Length: 298
Image (cartoon, rainbow, N blue to C red; front, side, top):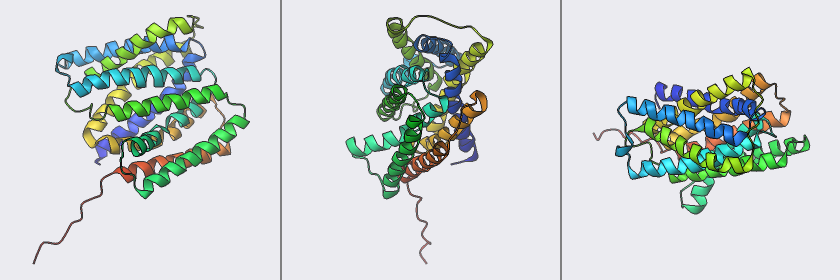
C-alpha cells in the first residue's frame, strides 16, 4: 500500500465519519427522509454532470456496474442512510457512527457463514472483539437512556450496507466511476422520494446551521467521500480499502464530541478501541500473505 493510498484512505475515513455529525444537525431541524432524498438528488445530479464533463457515460457501464447502481442505490442510500437519518432523530451522532462501523464485521461474518469464505484465526478473533466492544458500548448507552429503537434501526442499516457490499464487489472496475457514483445516488433519491411523503411531513426549522450542514453533506460525504472510496477500491482492492473503516468509530465519536458537545463515557472509549482492533484484525486476516522470497539456486 503506497503513501497515496494511505492518504486517500485517511481522507475517506474522515469525510465518511463526519457525515454523522452533519446529519445529526439536519434531522433535528428537518424531516430526515425528505431531506435525504433532496440531498441525493443534488449530489447525484452534480455527480452525473461531473461524469459527463469528464467524458464518462452510462452507455458504457458494465453489467456489474449497473448492478452496483441499483444495489447501492437501494441498500446503501435508501436503506442504510435512510434508516440512519431516521435513527439520528433520537440517538447521538457518535453512537450512530460506532454502530455503522460494525459493517465490515458483518461483511466478514456473512461471507464466512453464507458464502464459504475462509476466515483465519485472527479474523475469528476480530469478530469476537467486535462483539465484545459493541456489547460494552450498548450496555452503557442503554443504561444511560439511549433510544432502543434508534439503536435497532442503525444495526439494521449496517446489515443492509453489508449485504450491498457483498453483492457489488468489483463494481469499481471498468471505469466510469463518477457516473456510477452519481447514478446510484439518483436511485436512492427516487426511492426515498416515493416513500417519504407517506411517512413524514415537510416541517423545517430554517437556520444557518441547517443550511451549512446540508451543503456540507451534499458535497463532502455525498460526492467526495463516495468518489474517493471507489478510487481507493480500484487502486488497492476492496479488502485493503475496507481496512480504513476501522478508523471511522474514532473520527465519528471525535467529530460528534467536538462539534456537538456529545459526552463520552469510559465505556464508549473502551468499546471504540476494542471495535477498532476487531475491524483491523478481520481485515488483516483477509489480506493476502506476502510472497516468500527464496534465495536463487546456487
